[in-house]
View 1 (cartoon, rainbow, N blue to C red):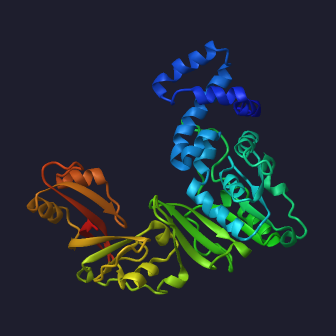
View 2 (cartoon, one colour; view 1 turned 90 degrees about the horizontal axis):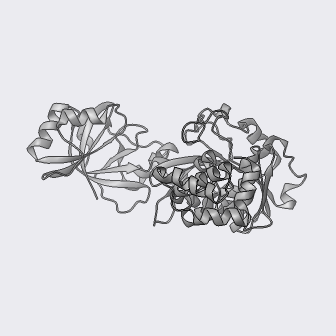
View 3 (cartoon, one colour; view 1 turned 60 degrees about the vertical axis):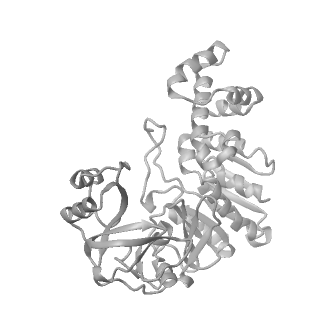
Length: 413
């Protein structure tokens, strides 16, 4: 797809054709393309329409009903901040009373859209012409906000950013340019040195403009963010999506924090002031109490397990795994899930198989952290499947306690 095709998709005729297409289905794609050709649509435009219909269907999970008014690329959709997370980013800029934000590497414009919706004017740039054109289309409901082609490295900060109430948002690309796979996506990169624009450029911008935010990988090491910044790990439905580093007036609490987002629930934030600095740890399997708490993965990634031990009076089973044992039942922490512990034993296939057999368990949910094993092979060894069958159901946690492999049979509460 090229920029001319993007402009056509955004035109009244392109929008009408896209709106009238049936829901995308691989089995009917050729027939739909043939129908479009019969209407005089070129092969390139027909392919673009089908691609947008397919991507819009995928985008529903991230953007809900807003997806129907947006255009996408495969990479852009993959890296775009989902609606709830983009709103979190935008809220910081709006709360800091910034008039303008320069979105350097705006992608398809999801964050720019969220900021614009809160009254912040956004100037977005992206070095890929098609992506920049798509972002500009997605920003049409907010005429003051625009996106154009450009390199982040060519941006020049204003002489007095405080007086002009200017901020910067960076979402460095974490995919390598080049040949895409069968889904249209390129290879993901994981090293901080490989992002574009570079980490050194992000730091340069943060020294030139006080209000800066940068969206980075959730695997960001704790010793990378500079002193005085806030590094916040964000999860959605238990999956960690990103670590965002904030500078200047965008910082709420310097240090590490976690933001837990779940459908239908208010956001929950955890910071270092809430956490034990040296969380207690279980020394033996015998110390496992009647309650197990599973910290949200954003809390674990942020190194804030101490917030769960502080809230529950518990102890970590093993450093960094996110499981906490406690004698106390604490309702609705918001950043940890509670289980009742029915059994705790050293990990042994034979012993676990016998325990499950004696209790008539025919359906098993397996959770594991700190133990590498093949789940399908384990099920074969236990002679138990995933289905309910006619017997009892059980949930087992395979993990480590004080350095030793262990299995905990638990019940969600």
